[in-house]
Amino acid sequence: MSNNDHVSATMREYLPLLDGMVNASVLPEDELRLSKQCLLMYRRLLKGPATNVELAEITKSMNTTARRTDLRNELQKHGWNLKLTKKLGGGVNVYALVDQDGNIKTGEQNHE
Image (cartoon, rainbow, N blue to C red; front, side, top):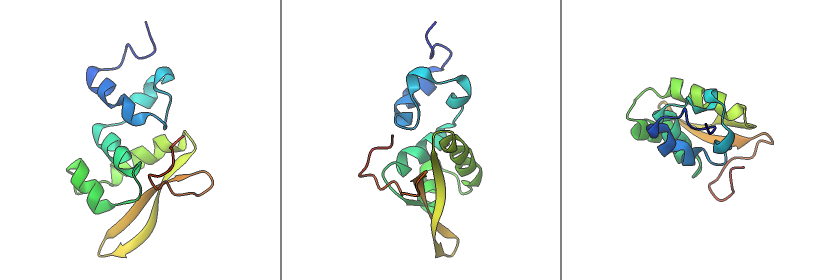
């Protein structure tokens, strides 16, 4: 039995999205528990900072707080973080993937 035999077909579809965040060939089961919404947010954030409005549109949810928390918790296991980088007003905030040195993922660098 390979390391990913326990993974559902749906999750296998999303494993490539995790590339760079985790090594999909050696994932323990708890690292495979990201929801589809978290994976969609992660994929968008790999391209650079995004507003909570953008993230809500992607996930089809007006309240992305819980999904951001889930994603942040997973990212921290791998030396990354999801941070609020700017408040634009009116409840609109900008979020970005940030490495352990505080560098913001801009989409131009590899997420390793």
